[in-house]
Image 1 (cartoon, rainbow, N blue to C red):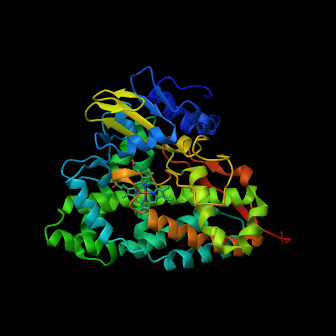
Image 2 (cartoon, rainbow, N blue to C red):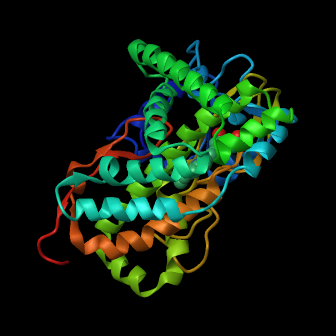
Length: 388
Ligand code: HEM
C-alpha cells in the first residue's frame, strides 16, 4: 500500500489530495486495515462488497465519522433515503423509484446544444455543456423550470461540499443557509403543484405514503445525488477520450462497444470514490470482527481496481462486462443507476459526433478536491481549427 493512511482523517486527506488520490487506486493490495483511530479501511473488492451487503453497517456521513457535530443532510423529521433503514428505507425507496422516469431525450437535446456552443467559441465543458444539460434533464424529471433547478444545483453544491469533514466553518454556515433556502423553495413548489417527480411526491403526500418533510428532503438531496455523480462520470469520460484518441475511432465504428466502455469508465474512475458506514452492532467478517460503533470506510475506487478480481485492472477491458462497485451494492445501491447509464449512453455518441470540433485543455482541467466525489469542476475547451 503506497503511503498507508493511519486514520480516517488521513484517508479523507488522501482522497481529496490531487497528489495522493491516484495512489488510493492501488490500496487494494492491502484489502483490509484497522486504522490507529479504530476505524476500518476496506479497499479490496470482496471486503467492500461484504460491507455493503451487511444490514448492521448503517450509513454515516464522513463529517460524522470525523466527529464533526452537524450534518446538513440529517434533519429531524426529514429522512433522506441514504440515511434510513428498513422499513422506512423500503417505503421511501419504493415511492421515489416509482416517480423516476428514464427519458434521456431532454438531456441529449441540451447536451447537443452545449456541444455546438463549445465548437463555436472558447468555453468550459462543465459550465457551458454538462451543467445546463443536467439542469434541463433534471427539470424534465422533477417537473421544474431549468432556472429553478440551476438554483437548487448551486444550493446542493454547498450541501455536498460540507460532506467533507475538512470544510471550513464559513462553508458549513453557508451550507446551512442554502439548505434552508432549498427546503423552503421546494416546500412551496410541492404545495403549489408541479408535474414530474415533484407532482408524484405531492400525490404520495396526499395519499399518506410520505409526509411533506420527507418529500422535500428527498427531492433536495436527489439533486445533489444526481448532479455531483453524473458530472464525475461525464468529465471522466471526456478526459478518458482525450487521453486515448484511438478509442474515439473504435467507438465510432462499433456502437456495440459503447455500453461496456461506459461501464469501464465508471469502474476505472469511480465517481463516488468512498462510502462511509458505522457498525450498529458488532459484525463478524471473514477478515475479523468489527466492533459496535466502529466506523467503516469503504473505498470503492480502490475496490474497483482490485487485481485479484479484475484482469489488467488499470486498463479498459471491453471483452466482457466486468461487474464493478461504481454504483454501490446492497440496500443503498444507487437508485439512479439506470438513469446515469442512460445519460452516459446518450452522451457518448454526441461526444463522438462533435469530437473533432473542439479541443479539450486537459492540462488546465480543475479536479474537485473532495473525499467522496471524484470529478472535475472545470475542463476548458476551444473551437478546433483543424480536424483531428
Ligand atoms: C454516474 C452517476 C452515479 C454514480 C456513480 C452514483 C453512485 C452511487 C453510489 C455509489 C451510491 C451508494 C452510496 C452508499 O452506499 O453510501 C448511490 C446511491 C444513491 N444514488 Fe447514485 N450515482 C449516480 C447517479 C445518480 C442519479 C442520476 C441519481 C438520481 C436521479 C442517483 C440517486 C441516488 C440515490 C437516491 C442513492 C441512495 C440510495 C439508497 O440509499 O437506497 N444517483 N449512488
